[in-house]
Image (cartoon, rainbow, N blue to C red; front, side, top):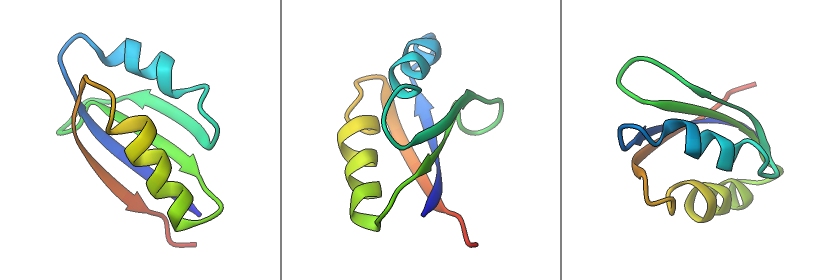
Length: 75
């Protein structure tokens, strides 16, 4: 299952977060973006439970992340 996670990040912490997220298992791509969110992360996960674990234990737990929105891709 593919998903896109959009994150609000504390100003100035974007690059540090990208360097933390890019090597994580399941992360396909992570980019800094302009618009209402600061970072978008494309992930590939075998199950919804594994996706939830990745979001909560690897992304939302980062001190610089204030909010996320997870969008599941429909294939």
